[in-house]
Length: 163
Image 1 (cartoon, rainbow, N blue to C red):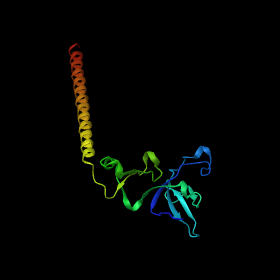
Image 2: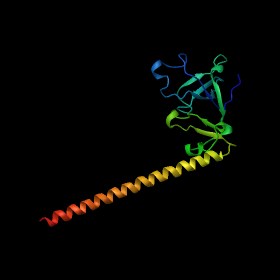
Image 3: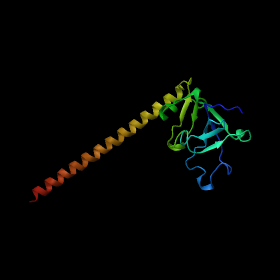
């Protein structure tokens, strides 16, 4: 059986591999890494808990159910901000811990990948637009505060002069 022990694999859930219908995705990413036991058995271990938790014994019959994603020696983990600077052909979105697809270490790129200049410029333009929006918001907030302060001072003067 030919298995890359330095790779991530994906498998679609089915009744044969789920404990029951209610927990098909509970504590599971359905992204696996192969591990060999001391007795020679090979298990596909779900990445949710790292090397523990949900596992499926690998056989000649079920090997075809696991789709190769990528060799770990060819990729590196990056931040979401970095991830957005690369072309889709160089990116991998992989759930690799208990954060799953929503919060897990999921941003990976090919080690030899280079920035896509258009995406870098697009990202910078977005950051500029966001900064301008934040500046507008803060200027409006300051103006509102100053107006309320003036109004409070006017009311204080009216109250003290009417006594």
